Amino acid sequence: MTQPYMSSAEIRQAFLDYFARNGHEVVPSSPLVPENDPTLLFVNAGMVQFKEVFLGRETRPYSRAVSCQRCVRAGGKHNDLENVG
Image 1: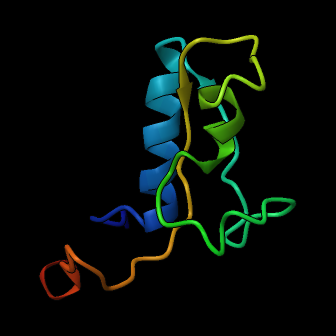
Image 2: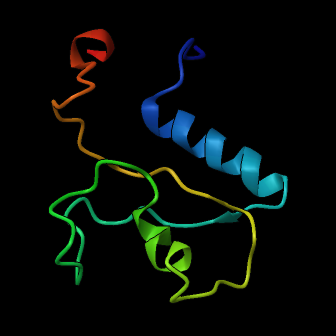
Image 3: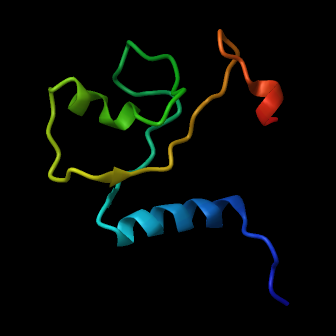
């Protein structure tokens, strides 16, 4: 019997596969607790693996990338945790 719903892992993989088919480099998720970066306590957005590129300290051999980043959702000024579950 066919499963009517995709698992979260299948959804993530379908997302990555779509962009990979369209010319994006698949970049691994950064660790939830960043290594070797004293400016970050934890990852709360999906761009940590590109931080050095944005700061101009590193270049990459690709110009388009896709990632499915683990992150922590925490309260703050724009707390929407009640809305997202």
